[in-house]
Length: 125
Image 1: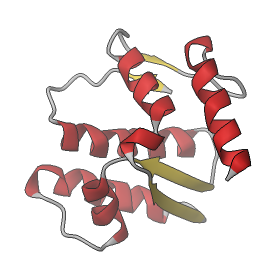
Image 2 (image 1 turned 120 degrees about the vertical axis):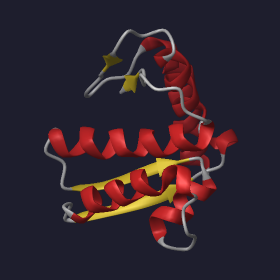
Image 3 (image 1 turned 180 degrees about the vertical axis):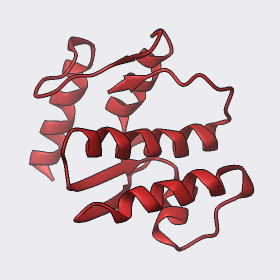
């Protein structure tokens, strides 16, 4: 999913909102077991309870944790930004959308090479 956010947010707030949107998307599609990956260490630490969130994202984090508690299993994963090229490409794509684009059981052609690279990287690890 790529979605344009309608608010002027900083990087940290955008990462927290993206997590919130991801949980909502998964729940609405019927997923009850899910792993949510992000590349903001501070957001990850706030979600896993290893850091107190800054005031600018504390309400978003509280909402995400409430949503997460409804899942049968909900894991928050952190990956460095350099290892998250697909997510970066989807975020850049969202900048040009008027609302959102959703792909299920497929992925957009503009990230095909990135997905292939990730699959090769994971299979060689």
